Image (cartoon, rainbow, N blue to C red; front, side, top):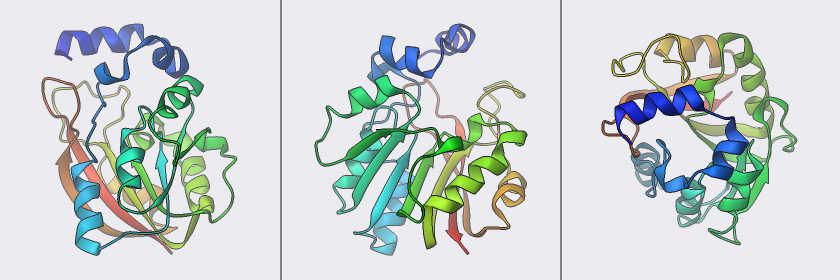
Length: 207
């Protein structure tokens, strides 16, 4: 996707469900067929190979599919029913569910791991406490969250627009009461854009 196409996308965005209904997922800015490189590194370096793993905002479902290859029991959720309908076609082994993270119907302490690649950063400051409340509820004690957000260091995209650009202090302010922050790392989002937007990758452990 070219920069002018990205601007047009943001101006004409019809909403998540209509977008997934009308659009080939392989053309979406965030589409990545391979497992996110930061999460892959964490899995390999820590020899994680079992447990319940939530791919939050699964979208095209590719991250859930790749996670399932490591031995995890994977659930993929998205607010868009059309995203979930498309993701279902990838695998019968993965539980794909329509779910709104701010009002999640997922059970308490269900997951050992959660991966958020681009959900948290769509919420404004007023919505973040509810997001953290739900994540804390559905994650097991001592569970691990991998969080990837647009970074404040990204200069090719406008400020004060969705996705919001997130700093380390934003993460501390939102998650610090409920999570130990194990790692911050400057990274990038790999997708279909002509450039790789700068990202902030964070590893958190529930207290």
